[in-house]
Length: 248
Image (cartoon, rainbow, N blue to C red; front, side, top):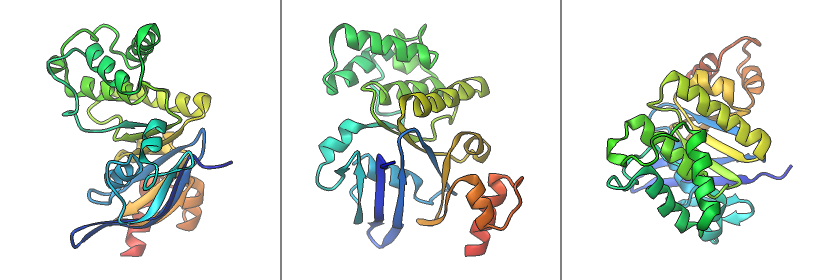
C-alpha cells in the first residue's frame, strides 16, 4: 500500500547544529506511527518539516505524493497539524470563534462548517465550553481544542505533537480512542510524537526510535524486540533503552 507520508533522507541543521540526519521513514493509510526519543532528539523538528513549517536542509518529504519542497501549498491542504503550542489561538475569542476563523482558512463556511465544529467539540469533550473565551481555558482544554482545529478539514494525514500532554487520564484515554478510530475507520495516516512510552505501546502500529537526530530503530514493537534480541514480553521502554545503549 502506498504511503501517504514518505520521508526521504531528511536532514536538518540550524547553523552548526545538526538536528536530523538521513531520516527515511513513512506512514500508510490507516497506520499510526509514533516518534519517540529523549528531549532534543529531533521529534518536533521532523513533524514541522512534514508540516512545511521548517524547510529541510537535505532530502525531501512527500505527502499524498506532493513534495514539501516544491508543492508546500498542496501538502498543507492534506495535513492536519496538532501542535503542543497554545499561543496560536486568539485568546479574546471563544473556542467556537477560533474554530470558525481557522475553518475559513480552509474555505469552509455555512451550515457544513457549523456542523463540523459542533461534532468536533463534542468529540473532544468541549461541547459545553465552546462559547467560553480561550483565555478562560485550562492548558488541557487548549490542547484538545488544538486537536479539533487540526481535524477541521478532515485531512488524510494528521500530525500530532504530544497530543495527550496535560490531559487527565480519562480525557487522554478518550483522545487515544479517537486517534485509533481516525486511523482505522477514516484510513488516515497518523504520525505522532510522545514521551509516554506506555501510551505509545498501546496505540502505535509502528514506532520510530529517534535519538540525537538519528534513527535507532523503526518498525513494529515485535520487530524492534527482535532487532534488540529481547523476548516477546519486553516493553517499549526496555526496547528503546536497549537501542540507545547499544548505539552509544
